[in-house]
Image 1 (cartoon, helix red, strand yellow):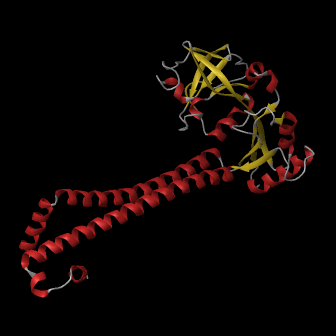
Image 2 (tube, helix red, strand yellow):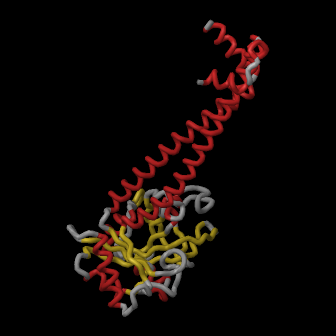
Image 3 (cartoon, helix red, strand yellow):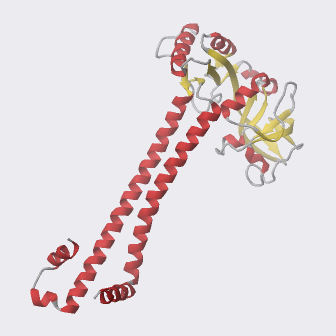
Length: 324
């Protein structure tokens, strides 16, 4: 009896190739969507934890309220006096202001517009740790490198930034001024970050004299034993009084590294929600296809053996008896 049933099943699959294929495909999509969801969620969680461990969870960011990326709105900035004041607040270990502005990058007679960062070479260890970046080729910036630049990861490759990849020792122009390429940073993973150009803060001030001592954001770290969240509140309160601003009307905001990760996690949760919806839809489609295939197979089988004629049962009754 089992051999007959197996033979009939194989025969039915052969006769209904398209239906069988669609049923198998819907099941495959449902299972694949679920595995993709789990893999994606676990991968992102591990990545966030890795970034947090590398950068250190004691980092804080004080950013001027403006439109667009930090440093791109000239009406909002943090002055050097603000940075010095933050560095003296109890519980702050280090504080450094970051220059950041769009620049015209020229190489091999081609011009592109990307962001240029001015780094305080005296605190380059702190900056690289916070950004979780390290030099992949060449060397990093040091004091006195007024005409040298370190480029983001993507500059090395053809057709990524320029038609021809940049090499160590090549010259690029930033806002018309020549710079020697002395290094490349390792890949960050974000195309925008991997297209950044890094120069010393002194070189930046020469390129952008109107931006001297005007920082788009400030990076800080808390001392051992000091909770970053509590320090963030203290910095916000003290800096507000220092700048003589009303509460709720500050031209800056303070964000801990955990806050930044929470914002990123929220975006990931939305993506996960979409994947869950896709998985549910795929599962429902698979279920409908399976039930439709079962129903059709039952009807054809009962017609062949004459049950429908002999018993006079309804199709739905036979389906119910067969399934349950």
